[in-house]
Every structure is written in structure tokens, then in C-alpha cells.
Image (cartoon, rainbow, N blue to C red):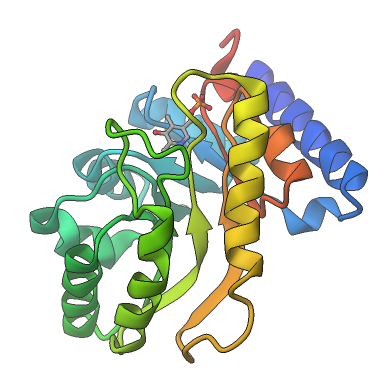
Length: 230
Ligand SMILES: *Cc1c(COP(=O)(O)O)cnc(C)c1O
């Protein structure tokens, strides 16, 4: 057992619980997704042993490799990075949730692949809230169109929204952007198609996960902080 990893996870979970409490929620309302993109399969296995069983990867091939390497362990895999359409099929077979759905064409590919594996794929719509051209995601005014499009897909279930805070790393910007994502979801709670809910908000990383939780995050994606000092 890697003691440092274990204490990192415990301290992150404590900070999650404190932030949830400040926002009038319970720690059970916020899931920790451990982002393992910085480490190899062995270290990824150690993270699971240390108590984090929901893992996020930003590159499809690495997700495939690690899920094979960790076969037999009870892990939920989260695809959190840009997904090219030619990598959809294998990813759909493995992932529990695809956070980074950023176009209607990708939604369609996911639907096709999920149909072939007789699965309904849970996805989030990635929103480019800071409207930076370097980032993926639907723009704010494309979300309604994406929801409408998803309504016609039988093997996709939209569970909510995902965003990354602006690349500049400014705390006030992050707070505003997380607030925007939350408002976007809240404004769409009623009249949604049967296969769409806005229950999940995936936002917040090592540097800003507490701000994200205070603004309604239900999943935080934490990488570097997990491995600090290991
Ligand atoms: C790398 C990454 C994270 C984790 O970032 P840290 O700052 O290391 O916690 C979260 N989300 C996405 C999409 C990432 O690519």
C-alpha cells in the first residue's frame, strides 16, 4: 500500500466534504474522479488500492491500455479528453461515462457504437464556457441544439454538462465559468427529452475543485494533487 497516495486521497476527500458542506450539500453528492493520465498502469493500480475506484483518462488509447491492465478490478472509467470518432467504438465498450462529448457528429458516432454493443452510453456535453478557441466543447448557444439532437438517439443518455475553467487559471474567472455552467443546467431542468437529464456537473480540477463544488459540481476531476509527493 502506498501510504502517501492514501493520505493524498483522504485529504482530497476531506476537502471535498468541507466544500460540499459549505454549499449546503453532502460529500456523497460529489464524486472524486481520479485522473491518472500522469502515471503508468502500476501506479494507477495503486490508486485503486488506496481507495479511488473512479478513474479518468484524457487519451482514448491509454484508457484502453489501462482498463486491460487493470482487468478484474472494480473500476469505473471516465473518458475526459477529446475523443476522435475513429476511437469511439473501443472507448464506448469500456467507459462508464464520456465527459467530453463536444459535437453532434460525435454524439451520433457514440450512438452507433453503443447500439452495436447493446449499451446505452452515458455522456456529458462538454461546454466551452470561456469561449476559448483552443478548447473543445459546444458553445453556450449550441447546447439546446445538442440536446434536441440527442433526443433522437436511442443509445445515448445525456446526464449533464462538463467544462474546464479558462486556461489562464484565474480564480475569479473559474468561479464565474462554473456558475455559468450551473445556470445553463438549471435553466434546462424541465421539458427535457426522456434520455436527457441535467443532474451531473463535471467541473473542477486540482487547482479549483473546491470552487467548483461551491458552484454545484457533482464530479471533480483531480489529477496532480493525487500524486503530490509520491
Ligand atoms: C488533466 C485533466 C484533469 C486533471 O487536472 P489536474 O490539474 O492535474 O488535477 C481534469 N480534467 C481534464 C479534462 C484533464 O485533461
